[in-house]
Length: 222
Image 1 (cartoon, one colour):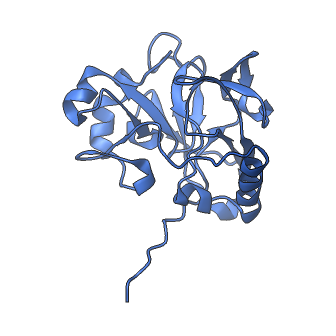
Image 2: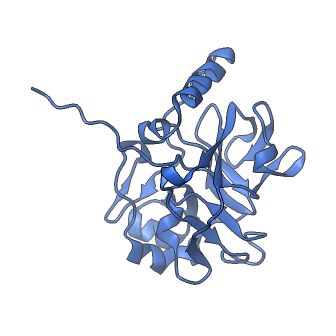
């Protein structure tokens, strides 16, 4: 009998932490202010309307992993513009000739947890209740947050399974109302330990040692 493998279940779906600002058609706006229909600047398709925007609150029972803090200036002068916190699985754009030499792609995504360097980019723990904000477009986008290019919510099976049933239903309803099906195609490949891979295939992220080697020098800012 053929075995059917369930996608791995994340404790909390990747997202922005409270306080992050995204560039919109009305200037930089806090992520917690954004709603469906708001227009956010994307790198590849100009200003795009948000299809769905919600937050997930991490409770004590969620056992959520530590957030990743990117300190002001870790990717260049005033980039990010303030200390910037992300879910550890939220992906950041790396762009450099070195990336192309190593992985045959001149740019790629890497999860925030793999670029920690013990200095400007670190894991942080908080006793307070954490909120993660998810921004979905009709396709996977690269958005400008605090001067850094990062991914929008990517609805692969693992991320969707980390949402509540109600949130999944609202995503389907939002797509239906706009007569659009949210695509499950990643905007860019993700850097792996030995190769690049499509994030939708749920592959293991880049080894931490390599992440520390290339981390802050290659993060792409605006």
